[in-house]
Length: 297
Image 1 (cartoon, rainbow, N blue to C red):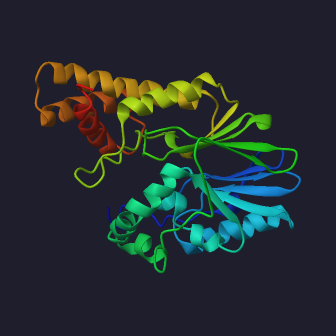
Image 2: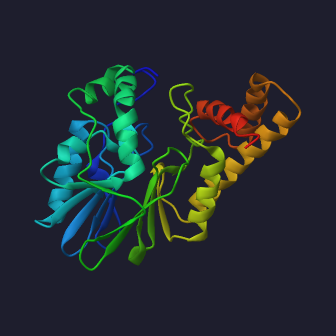
Image 3: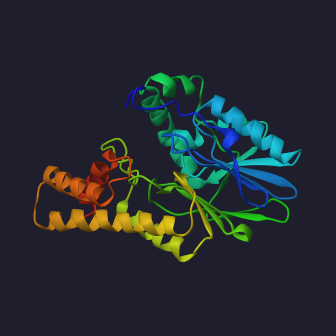
């Protein structure tokens, strides 16, 4: 990952889109390491979902959210601990109440420093955006679920259990039929498997698939993925179907005692042929590695 290959992960608040009443998404415009960011309003408060990577991005998001809020109380949440989603939260300190699920809070504390150093190691614009950044500490940590009353609108924060990370959280806005998934779903790319043994092996393809089955059954009207274009329930179905493909093709070859390198080569070629327009092809190998370890699970 070099600066030549990785564009500056800059959040562009000028492209914000209102997808429901008092519910705005700052889209990532398919730029790597830029998440889709939500600003959800009620009569008394506004919730921001994700910060972008680093203080400068977060300052833009905070300024935008403050303008939307017009004096209403501000809250912040993040869908998981990865840097482009949460490593701007320090900017919101003193301006917003930061709340997350307990496992995500544990991930921030235990794994956040290592991810901060890893991302700084990418150099270029990514390292510059992480200058002075500290791993954030949430103000409020919940266990089984949190219903946040914004005034006339309740937003449901729900941990999903292990999937893309140990601490994934989804954010649902029931009155608008909107679901923010974080990196449990993306559009236009292969599913992101942060499988980096021995340093990080918390991603689970098997459990991720089960999570998507549950989310799809709720049939949200609008799905805001972690990265990529906003869509409908088909977003969840497409990622679920891809994970099933990845699992089945990996396990079929694992059953025949094929070596992992050969499995990677065959599965990668097959899935690229099936999804030639998707980006993030390197994540296929990570996914195969993860699912090979889950073969006997």
